[in-house]
Length: 424
Image 1 (spheres, one colour):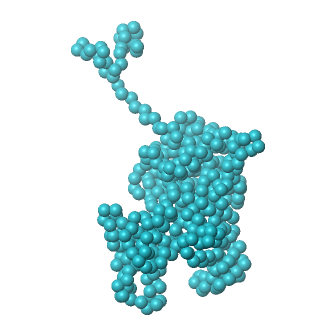
Image 2 (tube, rainbow, N blue to C red):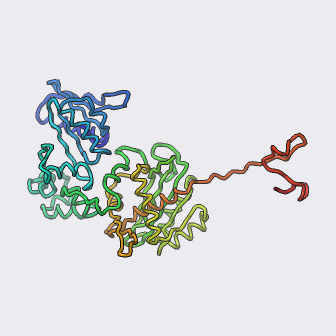
Image 3 (tube, helix red, strand yellow):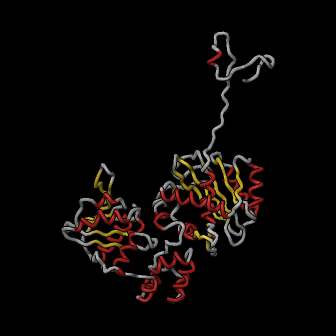
C-alpha cells in the first residue's frame, strides 16, 4: 500500500488493524521495517496468521519495484508523480493480485483524472472498475446518521438534517471549486488556472515537516534562519492583509510564515509587520503600496530604511512581472509552501486573461476569505528575494611601511592631502 506520506501510511495500517479486529482475524503489528537500506525505503508492516502481510509505505515509487501481490495506491493524485507511481506499481500484479487506486481529484490535468476519463469516455482500455462516492452519495446512504452517533453532546451537527449538513460543509470550504473537488468528485479546471493543482501539490510540505518560524526568530527544527524575505499584500475590510515570509537557502525558497490579518486597525497590522521586520535575518521586504498600503510602506521605510523596505505599486505590467516568477518557481520546484486549503484556493483563483488589445491581465474572484491576497503576498516575497543580499564589511588597510612594495598595496595613498594622503 502506497500513501501520500509517512503519517498517512501509518494511519492506513491503523485502520487495517482495527478492521482485522472487527473480523476477529489474528494480526501482529511488526512496526516499521527497512525494505531497502541503500534507498532508505521502509514500511509499516501488519503480519497475519496465514503468512500474508500488508506493507504500508509512503509515496516513493521505487518502493513498489520488485514486489508482487495486490496494490493499493492511496491518495493517488496527491503523489508527486502519479504517472511514474502507476508505471512502477502496475507490473507488480503480473502474477496475480489487483491494483486499487483511491483518491480525490487534484485538477483536471492530473494523471488520476486521465484514468477516470479513460473509463468514462475512452472505452476503458485499462479495464478499471470506477466507483464514485460524493458527499451527496454518502448522505443518501446514511452517512450523517453514523456520524451523529460518534459526535459529543452539544455538537451543532447533531441537530442537522442531510440538507443542512450539506450546506454546512459547503459553506466551510475555501471556495466553490474546492468544495466540488473535495466533496463532489468534480476535478478543478486547470485550463483557465494560472497554477495547476499538480504544480501546487508538488511544492507543498509533507505531513509532519517542521517549517514554521516562531516569534523568537527560531525555526521549528531548532535552527536559526540567516536570510529571510517578506511580502505584504495589504487589505483592510473584506480583503486580507497577508504577510508571507520565506527563507532562501541556495536556490530554494522555503515558506516560514503566512500571517493573515482581517478586520484589524492599521496600527494592529503595523505591529504584526514590525514584529517580523525586527528579526535580524530579514533582509528585504516588498509591500503593496496600492491604496491602503501606501502609508504602511512609507512608515515601514522610515523605520527600517529604504534598503530593507521596497514599496510596489500594483499595475497590470507589475502584476505580470510578479506572477510569472512565481509560476517558474513552482514549475522547477524551487519553492515550498504549506499544505493548506485556503492557500490552495488563493493560488488557484488567479486567472490569466488577454484583452482585445493583446494586453495580459491577472484576475481573481473575490470571496469571503480574500481576493487572492496570499498569492500576491507570496509573489512580493519572491520578488524581495530576487535581488541577492549584499554583505557589508569594513576591512582596514594599514599604512605602507618602508619595506612594502607600492604595487602590492590594495589601497594606494598619495601625498597630496596631508599626512593621511588621498586615494587614487
